[in-house]
Length: 429
Image (cartoon, rainbow, N blue to C red):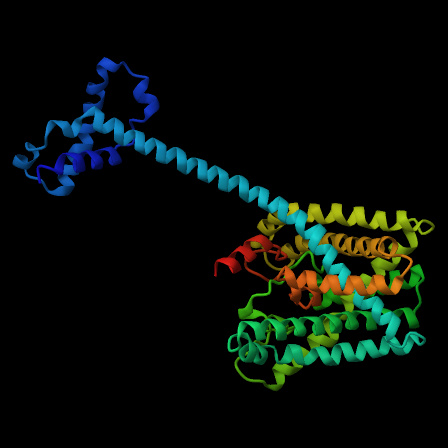
């Protein structure tokens, strides 16, 4: 015991008394250092001996070198170096965290936004080219019916698909099936929107009065249904392609009827209502804002037209991203009208930025990407957009299927955009 006790006791003393740091130690008169050391260590020694239950006779056996300044200096040097290293790591983590959020926002707006819009533009305009191109009304009606009817099974049977394919298949088979599923659902989602959009064009026209009136009606409908938060689309909300929730994330509910292991009438009716009804006001609102920008943003100059939307969309989206934490904090503790008073203006602000960003990128592709071969340009953006989103593990984001009610959520209003954090979690697991 006498061999290891001095060093062990000195180590305990040095750990329990951090007050003597390198800075204040060197600031003292070196001739008085042992005095200061003993004076500041005595309470610690007493505490250690009391904790250890040492008798008075055992206390007298504590060797003098337990108070050695050399031992203490060594322990303090180690403690100071560890503190400096920890501080440096914490500072680096803080800087990287802030920098990562800025980089993430830039990445989502520019890269994710471009691939998302590319996929939609390609699918939409390839459909224009091949699905009853000579009959606008028939083409629109076909897309509306097929898009909604065919999308319904993917939502109603989302949990069956997850149970059957999510965990019981090999990785290779899962990748093939899941990506084909994503491609099909992406086409159906575009057809849902295109069907409603073109039916309105066919029956109402594209005048500013038509855009304004339908946009106003859709806004009132969304307020009554409490689905205003569904207006913004990606990049405002991302759906990460985790295998554990790859298919079940497609499940959407308006009345809040959750999956309990088996199909029943209320569950199916809830999904039918969500698919056929709840998304229509958002589509109408998008068409109204898009059409008004077509008419009023430099209509005589196509380049200025798309640049106005693009710049406006980037700026508004960046501001929305920056104020995200502030809005979430403001809405976290609020409920009812007091929360909606803050949430609704922010949602409309995000919606305006999102629609402008989409329109700017879309028109940019129309003008700048192989303008002499419109058909090839559409096919390229469709394929590249789909593959790019799948490669970034956000392929399910293309379908824009999320459904959230206004004023809900215990953590305040927010659109899921923690892309880097989620991808890192996926890599680690």
